Length: 152
Image (cartoon, rainbow, N blue to C red; front, side):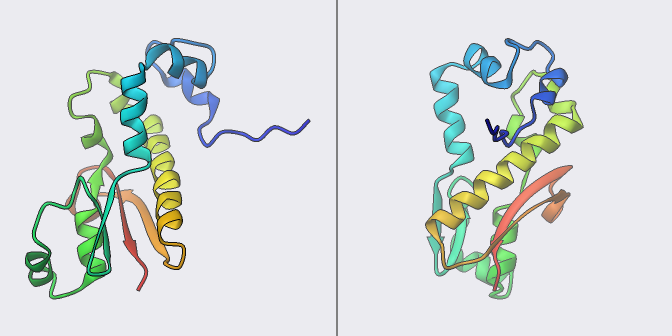
């Protein structure tokens, strides 16, 4: 028998305030409804938009591309990095869970997002190379943040 581990460690369950099961999968099926599960799929496998060779998270792309080109002097890598940057804490602005204050869980969440976003980009753009960056205060975001941009 060979076991292929999940991308998230079962040891993270010990950081949960009120676990609803003995495993992460058990917790998820007990604590999340169908609507939460479906909504999370959109976070892990997000809607993307491509504009003039730049790829953006549709959720974050809110300014006209021409304005961004002026703001960043035509540097498409800087535009992508800036538009796609997001603080991980901001994913949970309305959350009352104390887990958003747990650095271990926030870091694991970032690793998971980076994994899925990388797969998403590779699936849609197999000929392109993307950097999916996870670091502190990317583009002025507070705390641990994530972004992606095309390697040019």
